[in-house]
Amino acid sequence: MTRLHVDFILPCDPSMGVIHHGAIVFDKTILDLGDGGAMEARYPDATPVVAPKGSVALPGLVNPHVHLEFSANQGVLDFGAFVPWLQSVIAHREALQEAATSAVIEEAIASMLRTGTTAFGAISSFGLELDACVNTPARVVFFTELLGSRPDAVDILFNDFKQRLRGAYERENSRFKAALSIHSPYSTHPILAKNALDIARRENLIVSTHFMESKAERLWLDAGKGDFAGFFKGFSPHAAPLCSGLEYVRLFQGTRTLFTHGVHASFPELDAIGTQGGSITHCPVSNRLLGTGVLALDPVFERNIPLTLGTDGLSSNISLSLWDEMRSALFAHPDVPLNTLAKTLLHSATAQNAKALGLDAGVLESGKAADIIVMALSGATSANLPLHLVLHAQTPSHIFIEGSLVC
Ligand code: MCF
Ligand code: FE
Image (cartoon, rainbow, N blue to C red; front, side):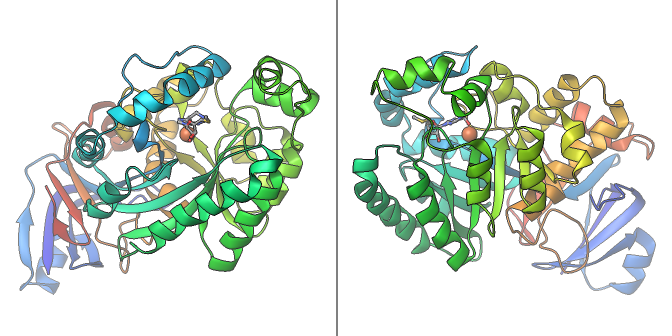
């Protein structure tokens, strides 16, 4: 049993309050937390760890959406507009896959751990990152991706998907969970999506999907127009949208789904996401680099849709650090008061992300997993602590996962 003493505890419960001179007592799970003196009196035999002055303990960060197989991208993919980016993905897919060696993928995971991410959701297109995800000390929700729009290939695609999903299932353990991802409404045939979602409902699997990321996606699904019209007509002159945005959202009824991006989601689509208990995963850096716009936060908050925050992959980012992502988000929404936004972002990056991934972590409270990070913040005071953490945090001094010190 460990008793961790810090200047500040930020439990990341909905109040986003701070405990001054606190201690957390834990083994694999959190047993108690509160005033440092009181914890010492109550648990005198626990092994004390006293963090340096100015230290802040908070839950390990949780990144719900990362494409590790694209980690070798550095200058390969075209940024600035969505469909040209997608075309560059298709043109360089094989080269990127080859370059995504185990060393590259392991370093991408290490970079997340180093910056305090103790759990992540890996969107897996091919299964290349499976071993690295099983072997990391971090918690992983492994989303096997389903993609493909050709009706004549539905059976082949679905069988390949089921095989990859089974591969993930076979590796499940207390920290690694299988899940599934339907790529998007423009790329996945609704029959395929429906079959996979039946599995998700039956097996109670967490689901992730890209949804209404770009204006091009909006125009294509609404009217068969825009950049996607040129893109798809290159494959088939009779190409047409596979379903409407709202029909797509409704396919996910009865599942726990993370809808990623949602920048161009309509109000009725957001209403449906809210009623169905879905969350919106905001990836502001990815949205900037792929030229897809800025997510309007108010419509999400007005519907009480949980806001989750992800980095996306290095296919559309320069960093997998959630601290970097929070800093970018702070500048992407100048209309939201600074201190309020910092609290919202930290709550998203911890409690909301963990809940969306179905993890019993992300909040420092009794009974939750002892996934804890300690950040050194010299000069910290209780006032506006979340803002100063978001502005200055880089790498934790301590990282505990399931109560064990991992670095
Ligand atoms: O989230 C970003 C942008 N939107 C869609 N897909 C991806 C992103 N980063 C990587 N991807 C992957 C996706 O999983 O790129 C492929 C899929 O396998 C695009 S479809 C050929
Ligand atoms: Fe993505």
